[in-house]
Image 1 (tube, rainbow, N blue to C red):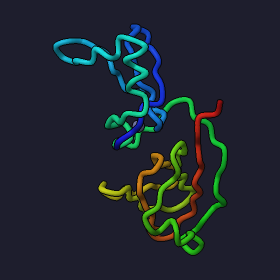
Image 2 (image 1 turned 90 degrees about the vertical axis):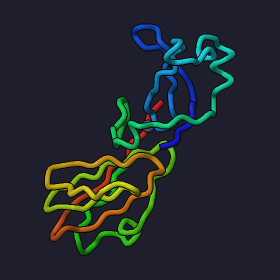
Image 3 (image 1 turned 120 degrees about the vertical axis):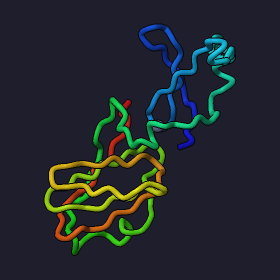
Image 4 (image 1 turned 90 degrees about the horizontal axis):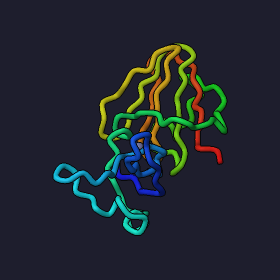
Length: 152
Ligand SMILES: [Zn+2]
């Protein structure tokens, strides 16, 4: 999934890592001949790439980023009370990760362009910001969705 560079930090080996707007990081080291990114070696070069877009595989893999905090959650829904909006393709906004918590039964979770996952009782599923997805009850189900962001 395409994500914008919003900042940088250095890892424990002093390699430069781009901070993406999904809260994942991605290495941008200059390591010729394998990685030819001379811009990452200078403050000016890094600044010039702010706002540019990188492909974030960790979002495609639905990998929940570290360091996020829950700020809101929905009420519990059942197969009879799932809001219609959740059954159709929809997204969370930029800066918001969702996590579906299935309390009972099972829920089908389908991120756009990916196979459906059956989320069972006691399990969770991650929803990246702005990724189209929908859910469907798989028999009787009880679940809620919690929302996470990076708190300053
Ligand atoms: Zn990402």
